[in-house]
Amino acid sequence: MPYPLSHIAVFASGTGTTLQTLIDQQTQCGYRIALVVTNRPCPSLQRAEQADIPTLLSTDWTDIDHALQQHHIQLVVLAGFLAIIPEWICTKWDKRIINIHPSLLPKHGGKGMYGIHVQEAVLAAGDTVAGCTVHYVSAAIDGGSIIAQAQVEVLPNDTPESLSARVQQQEKRLLPRTIAEIIQNS
Ligand code: GAR
Image (tube, rainbow, N blue to C red; front, side):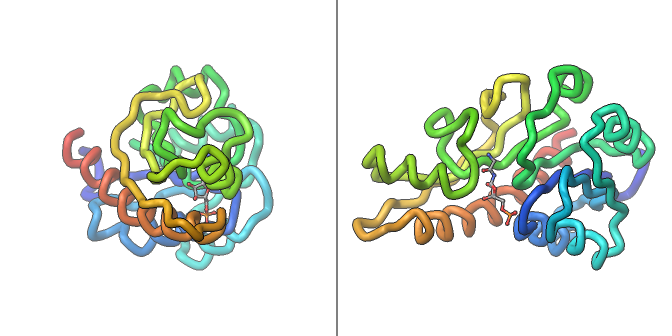
């Protein structure tokens, strides 16, 4: 391993609460966030800057690919990154990009399924169990192989927001732990 702590990149487009969890747990989980990539101005950028992490705001995948190499990135983590990853990036970084999705895939994945829309779909389907999934990223949206999942009970009075809050708590436990396991096994 070229560095004492594995270099990871986090891609985020939103409020960045998942990114913040990953920042807070980086040393204890055996990784260092060496780059944060966003595709739009968003609070994730400020969180990264406050933690002195290099950032890249770009939608140019050639530039993003170069930055990943420049920062010696070993694993890319999508944490609320709302853009489709082009096929050539999926191929080039095969098994080195993971995503956290707020459902028990293969349920409630695919195009348009992100954020609160996922829990709306869970409630509309009458599911009694919800949850989150960490999976490898492939060209099929939310279709890469599943690495880990955590379940959350759906309560009778749940709203999309209340369910989402409990799922997000589980996401923030599952994701750092899964990254640590991937690093240990690599
Ligand atoms: C997370 O709940 C993540 O699972 C979801 O976006 C949220 C990001 O929140 N990702 C998807 O829906 C991907 N399909 P954050 O910006 O506060 O970290």
